[in-house]
Length: 125
Image 1 (cartoon, helix red, strand yellow):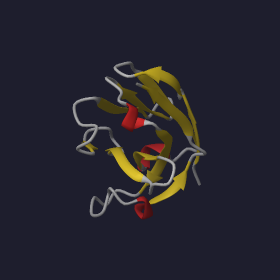
Image 2: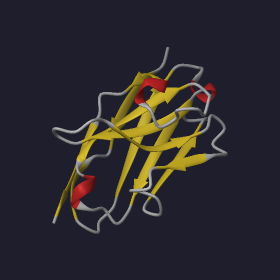
Image 3: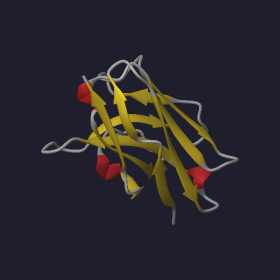
Image 4: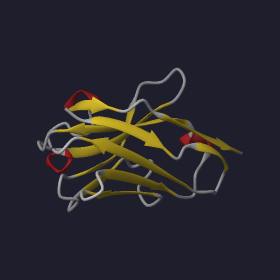
């Protein structure tokens, strides 16, 4: 079992940056691939980024590629999302999630077993 708690959201102007963090409990954190998803009002939850259990491989949605960076520290049980050059369309609740190692369907929320409560990111124009 993994419990996840996100932090770091807030209000930022377009072009600004935020660093989201996700703290995990449990001794098995390093065995899980970790993902970040987001959900805007009235929209479905969408994939943002994923990092492998070792941290050696990362994957991004096209909409955030080149602006967002996912990283993890298995010694501290944390996974971060550095979001730069934020745009109003990045406004959403951001969730971290823990999933298995299989890459097939990695952008699907159904492939992740554990979820945090979310942190709000609001980007003003």
